[in-house]
Length: 81
Picture (tube, rainbow, N blue to C red):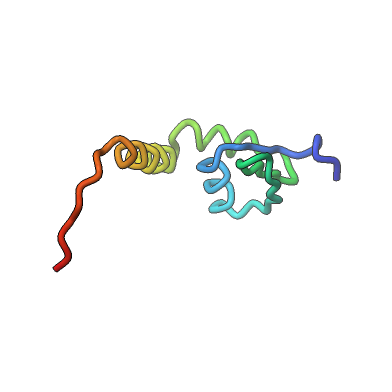
């Protein structure tokens, strides 16, 4: 199958959602990012993801927010014990 016949995304959270829904995928590396290819048109499922159906988008946004919060927080040494 030609890659142009497939749905693809670079959005890791969207790819994780589609994988969770059971869609098979192929992964290619483009520089330091992944490109996730699916063998079929998945617009309906992608729309569900971006509409926030099932709370998955909120979960993904919270993970991204927490990562950002960690990166923007000053380092504080925590004593062992």
